[in-house]
Amino acid sequence: GESGSVITLVTRDQRRDMARLMAQAGITPRITQVRPGDPELSRITGARTPSGVPVVIAAPVVEPPRRAASAPSRGRRGRTGQG
Image 1: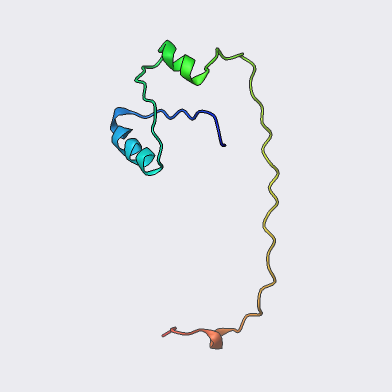
Image 2: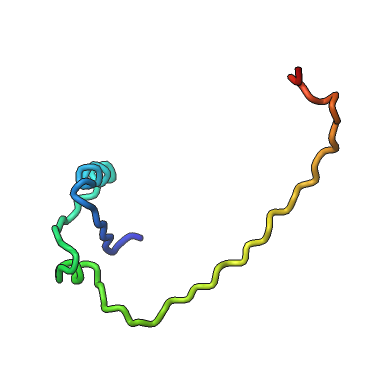
């Protein structure tokens, strides 16, 4: 993260909030107005024509959470505020 470019796409409605956020972060952005399909947008983002090869990502294996040993129940006497 010390160098490179970050491209942030915002709508007209989001511009003011994004400008405030960048100012707070000390960032002076270069602003370019583009439309979908604009060649400048492709140049800025490095967009390429999709290869047509699907991306397959295996879902990670998630182990069920382990249950902690619970304290023995105290029965009805341990309850408070029951009437």
